[in-house]
Image 1 (cartoon, rainbow, N blue to C red):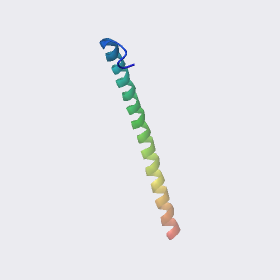
Image 2: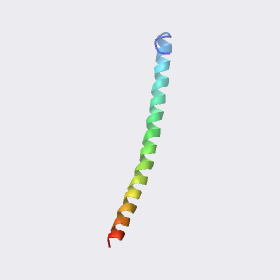
Image 3: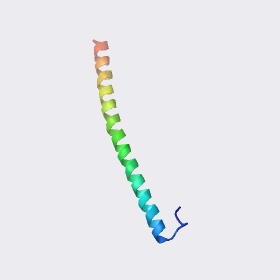
Image 4: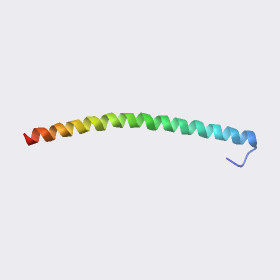
Length: 55
């Protein structure tokens, strides 16, 4: 819609786009935190399994 409306319409579209991008950033950060905990736990378990197998 950018470029097809007047100035107020374009400002409105930009604000809507900024809100959408902010929401996507929040979702990505939440997914990163969830995955970070999963991979840290998985790494610890695999390391422990390797130690057990070696001894």
